[in-house]
Image 1 (cartoon, one colour):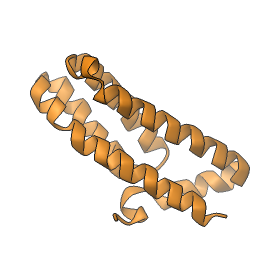
Image 2 (cartoon, rainbow, N blue to C red):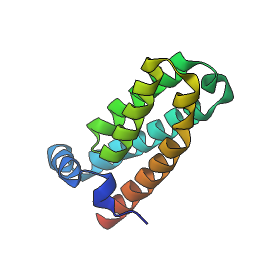
Image 3 (cartoon, rainbow, N blue to C red):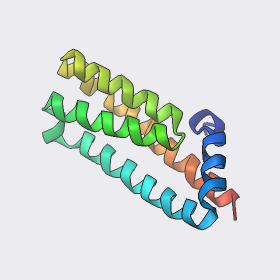
Image 4 (spheres, rainbow, N blue to C red):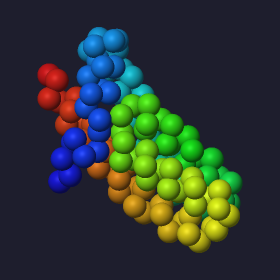
Amino acid sequence: MVPTHDLLDLSVLQELRETVGDTVFQEIGETFAEQIALIVERLDDPACQNQIECLERNAHELAGAAGSFGATALAECARDVMLAGRAGNLDNTRALIPELATTSAMTLDAFARYCTSLS
């Protein structure tokens, strides 16, 4: 299991919690987790995997969402996919999706552990 601090910037999460409070943080966190899962699902869709623009656009959205929530490793993986898409090579871009999906799953697990530790 990858340590939480390797996947999440805990200072970003702490600052967000202090700013909005625990209840709102939990609500935002649920939305974050749902959004991440939805974007990764779109990236894994065969129709999207055949369109470099779809991969690049969804990776861009994922990088932004992950970065704003302190999911640094996921944001980095998403940026890699986005940049590969912008370079125009569909095969290279698709080849990065499995690592992105794995990092996403590990990030969501780490975030769930973080939230559980708050209780």
